[in-house]
Length: 352
Image (tube, rainbow, N blue to C red; front, side, top):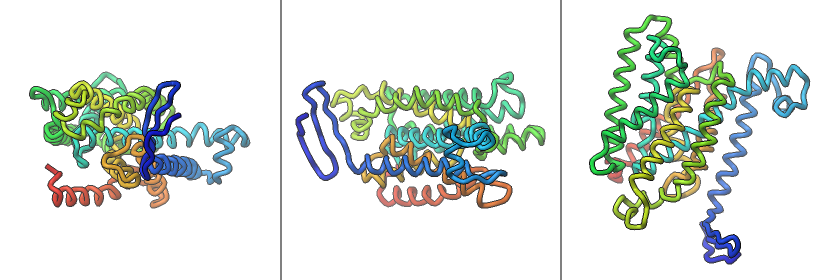
């Protein structure tokens, strides 16, 4: 290995055999490692909460099959699906938020703000309240709603190509339309179906089973490596379309691929856990500041999303005896960050 360049914030290297070169950021590796450990700790702590109190050692024993039969059953069959849904949904929301904030070059752009979550919610509410979709289930309806909304945003933003600014503006309009349509559907639904829909709309990890975990895990296995593969062009997209094209980046195919991959991640996460608010908005901004980078890092943003969801779920269950939905806690924590981003964008003129 021949070391080409060594700086305080990065190490650039080139291997003679195989012929591979790359760039490593030590601070980003350290932040990602700390976030991964913190996510695992919260993952285990969340499984100690329930009708049968358990210690962390009991959870670890049940998780890896070393405990008694009762503990193993409680951990693996009753509590592990909820914890895994929170972990995977947080990873998906965080990675998706980093993708959208990068391709639009705007920290306020997230799936929450440009209508993808709202589109998924409209389809699911229509399915719960009126039987739309012929019993496809919330997972399939949420996925279809999220992907169709993403395609609609991209198509309406197209004018001899797309720009991040147009995607953001069109997305805000689509968000308003989907929110209004969801409110209309709720107003026409029966009281029982409306209550079930509202319970899903706030984002909730209660009563999650393996049927929620498996599709989300499969989506992450396929889409997260795709996002990482396309991320090598994300740095040039931040320089503007003309400069990126001049550097050899296929701007429109890369933007469409990132948009569909990001929309797929958030659609699967929303279908499994509901539209947990503000995670996709706040996680990339937290990770970017922890890593001291000019744009949100994908992996660290995903891990931050997992920490936010798992931590908020613990707070939600410990705060009241009836256990609040996790989406209420992320909304309370995320709203001040949104206001701070708006104020910061207004001062710097980057908010559009």
